Image 1 (spheres, helix red, strand yellow):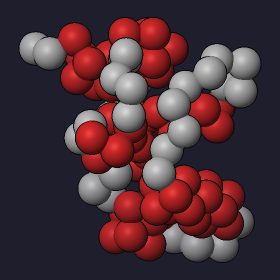
Image 2: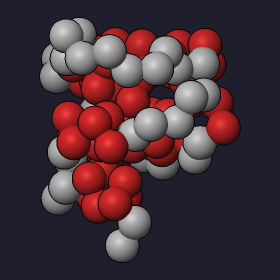
Image 3: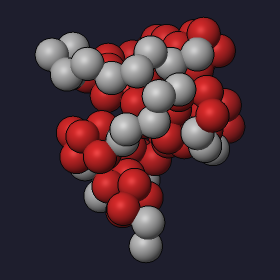
Length: 94
């Protein structure tokens, strides 16, 4: 298994970011960009490459909807909208 994918499957974002050495985040797979954006949000002490605007906005939407899901929105809606993202896997996959 590729070293990056193993870190993502184990939800080990610190190790993933440590191993990640690409200069540009836009040239890597979508789930890698999503993982880096999430890690930058969760741990602001570790400097990771800035995600592209579309990824950053989508993560903001996900986090806002996830917060609302605790109160009123069904998890179904999150799955329909973000089920194919690394963020959904990170928080909800078993």
